Length: 181
Image (cartoon, rainbow, N blue to C red; front, top):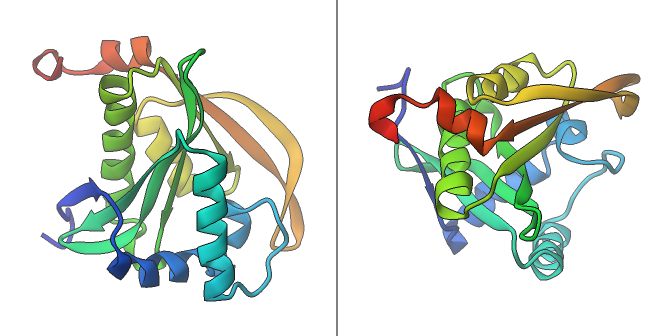
């Protein structure tokens, strides 16, 4: 079971705040999750940021990622445009949850939720070019590279490209097994 944990997406509860704060304050992966410069993040500032984001983007959908019954991160749809039918996807996992198939399962589930339950027609995301693990997860889910913002991010002492990826519902549906439709 350790190689392929059972992954579910669920609503957040108060008990999840510790793991989400730990992820939000992780300086090791800061630049992969934030446009702002790395800095210590207090719990109070983290909670205030969550509240501001919820207020500013009421159409956002945020799930806690749970693996074998333990909260290990979050996945969301944000920047939702109901008129054009698209949203941006974001995911963050605590370090010990990475490289275990959890992100792959969570991305597959949020994609299905977006297309089937939210009736979106397009998803997009951004990733640091050196984050090969994340790029592979997104490609497995059907995302394709649509462009690059060259030397757009300052990451651990060097400029890096941001890879822009997208997925159309029509492409996702065409790639699903017949039994899943």
